[in-house]
Amino acid sequence: MALCRLCSKDRNLVKAHIVPEAFFRALRAGGEIPLLITNLRGHYPKRSQIGVYDQGILCEDCESKFSSVDSYGIDVFLNRFEELFQPINHQGTSVAFQARDIDQELLLRFLVATLWRASVSTQPYYDRVRLGPYESVAANAVSVPEQPVSGIFSAVLSCWTATEEHDYFTQVLMNPVREQWSGINAYRFYFGRIVAYIKVSNQQSPMPFRELALMNQQVLSVVTRDFDKSKDLSAMIGVAKASRAWRN
Image (cartoon, rainbow, N blue to C red; front, side):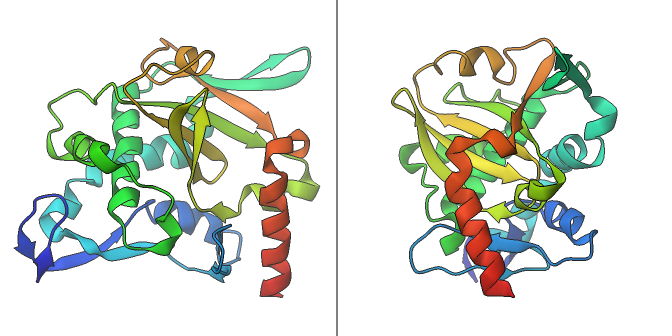
């Protein structure tokens, strides 16, 4: 028996995933065990069949409350992305994917639910996610689903494109990291090729993040990012190469 972090009751706790297991199962479909890597000092890469779970945060009843939001996130990001989203090209170059029939509020709720689980997790893989006074506000996205998601949170989405040479690196499972947009706190989460940038602040997001955020668009746009030309991910490539050498 231990204290559930959502209902605050003393109960038997269950294995709860932070990022749903389905994203890890998708990577196993290619025949390789997903490789978890982190740039945290003193932590080394490891292979994981089912991803990162935590048996110290949720009771069975509360864990089930994540089912509907997790299912929707898996459906949109993984199972039906190519069906739901149409590629947008400009002068022969892919610039975005767009979709009309997306429940953007439910998708944001999924991202905030994932953010909350990472914040309360005891796993070192999520050490860089700490919501502090906003933790209870994020919990409401799951425990009080009839209320709108707080304006403290917003999210922008991107999707990796890459040449065959670098495609492996877009599948590497990186730990979430904290970053800032013009001094405003945000967290970057990886869901396979989809990357979510989740704002955590009472302040409005700067442009163009505000314009592209979930629930601020009638047609949801997921911006494409060319992995081969991405300077800000040079560190990710270095860690991935080191991890691959370590694995071999």
